Length: 92
View 1 (tube, rainbow, N blue to C red):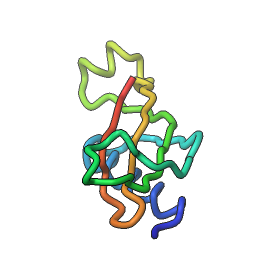
View 2 (cartoon, rainbow, N blue to C red):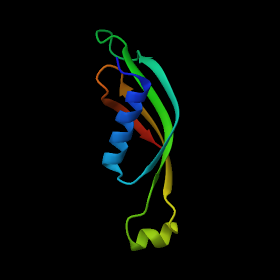
View 3 (cartoon, one colour):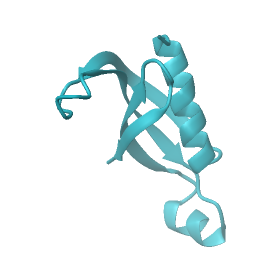
């Protein structure tokens, strides 16, 4: 089993791979079991991480549109509690 800090590191690594130079703020980290799976699979232990991140503009046009401020996006990401893989994500 991984710890909550390791789940946060996996999430941070995932977001920085997709969106370089982002500022990430974690809000909530819960240990949950996903049980809405087929009967033969059984529940899966996961961490549910919530927070937001700010994508900084990358170019002259983006600088003009966002006025040097980033675009703030909130997220919910599920991390597998034993392998630290990202299972699902939702950006709002």
